[in-house]
Image 1 (cartoon, helix red, strand yellow):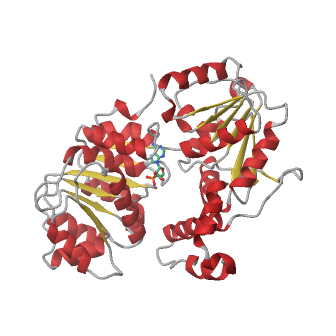
Image 2 (cartoon, helix red, strand yellow; image 1 turned 30 degrees about the vertical axis):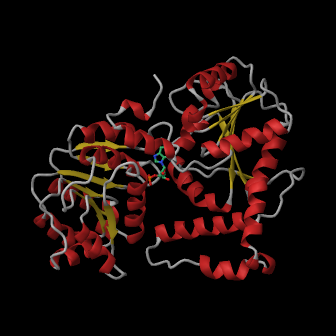
Image 3 (tube, rainbow, N blue to C red; image 1 turned 90 degrees about the vertical axis):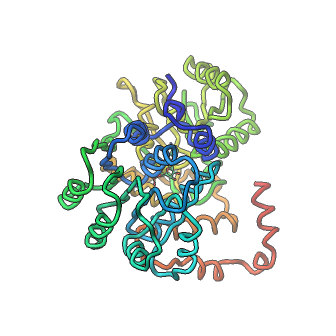
Length: 436
Ligand code: AMP
């Protein structure tokens, strides 16, 4: 059976939102947690960022609270930092886009006016840092009596940041009868104690990312400064005969389509390359899979839909055109090759914005992926202005995630790095990007 979000008891509004986000198959934590939360159990989730944990707790909760109702919050989500609070609230915006649910993130270090206004106008979901929650609660701005779901995200970080006193107070002022979900990247003793206090007969769900990658797989990493270099390098690698059967993994459907179109333009025919992803229709997908499995097609360009559940043996090469943001997918992806004692190669392309994710993946697989220099035959063009800005912005966001006090260097860089002619002609730069 194919592994899709249809296996869960989710309504059309949520399934459509998931589809818009381009999630084709649930991640392991989603597969495990969504049914358990839907059944009304408390959950203790041990999962790191990058596992898809946010959607794992949001989807079943959104399913339960469904639509806007009354004036008082029914779901409270606590997060240690303002960045995480904003990130969770953004995920709510995306997943609840086809519902009328009202939500807001509140956090310190900024004025209370708009936060209070949102609370007064009625909310269903509140995402909060513990300190700001207590401030506004003590001001009488938060009514807690309707809270049915209480979620703590990154509980270990909350403990480390010394939020325990505030959390204790919050637990005193919210209704006893409620569902509780606690997520933590690690499970030290203090989190264990908190979970005993806070959760009632919880189901423990742990995604221990597979620590080892198949030993018969040879891994390599190329530091590619930009998209165009990735394309050039891919073309070069595919021109070699040793890739007898390769899968090219891309993060999104759009990238997969782009890569496919590029290879087509380079003269690769239907018997050489196919693309599969969720938008392709079941039949087309199955046909392409079968053709690839039988060896009638040499290269398959794919999103992660092909990485799970579907057994394709004897892949000679896996090429990660993008670094997966769900880190376990790295292990899943490269597990396609080197099966049954066959030698395989897993090649990854990495832009500067993806270094952050590679560092996390290397932690999970507990080894460093060997770096390889880009072959001299491959043209390495300069990074277009807009792409460079996007990369810098992403790096800034990553640093903010790691360090709540980091203010961001992007704005200074922006002024300094921007060439004069482009400072006046934003549209020109944008047009260039589209024609790429
Ligand atoms: P999280 O671990 O919740 O921080 O999620 C990590 C990233 O994975 C986020 O960028 C999500 O948008 C993305 N994501 C979550 N679930 C899926 C899924 N099933 N398929 C693809 N991407 C996902």
